[in-house]
Length: 384
Image 1: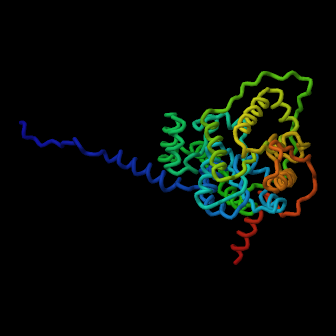
Image 2 (image 1 turned 135 degrees about the vertical axis):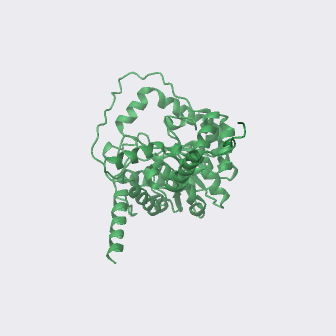
Image 3 (image 1 turned 180 degrees about the vertical axis):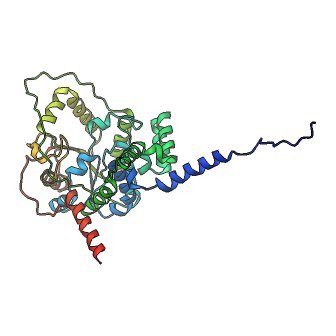
């Protein structure tokens, strides 16, 4: 009775489970890897800049770092024309203090030797740590494993380690919001358009030496708070990890005898009035002054209240092509004076000249024009 043969399944792998694992890996490594449909503009920006930094940084006397306010606001071609110093922008969308530091270090490691760098640190982004859930930074699109390990060690945050680790292995975790958007669009029969957006951005960044020129936008509301309105006690403070990387950036530049220009970009009158009356703007300026008092190579370019009306913005903080051309010309003028005459004492807090609507002599191609140029080129190829 006990000699009836039985199938011993111990140690065997269920075929269904194995098939599911193979399917998941196929999707993760095949369908989603590098698929532009599943990358938002921020991720595309970080990935693109991380790939080109070593090739593009060399040979430039002026490099720009930071976030979208600087990437949209300073056009390197205008800076080059106005300063006589070859310029390139390595700013990224939603750029943070660590991203600027690692990009500067890569640029220097590649042999770049700029005489000056311009960087901006948006107040709201400085307040969010590297593991922010409200502002998830695409670290895996930019950092190499050694850099990611260094960031995690500096932050000493288990959540950051987990977040980066999961996103490195699983694209579905890294790009879950974009996947959700893409699936909904497919089910409704509408294209997401992201596959067309990324090439247009690449062309625009290449054409504008790393800058991004925004087309004119539709009018939007911009309510100004009266000056008589009481100013609230601010609550802003810089995230400790971000402050560490702000200092590391300045110290790295200092070790290579590079001047650092901390850019305070303009915003619309309404936006700036809200910042001032929140009380947080003064706390931020106090933070900037604290850093400047500790580093002799740190200068400030202040364009916050220089007469930029909302007509040259696409939203409360981002300039369009006309605003960017004007700001770039004003910054170039300030840099030309500050970077010249070695040994001469220059002002360390520089007020940028008021808005001047003089058209730039330098050709600037905006994103809409980049998209149309690509569409025309595609049409020509199809006709051949």
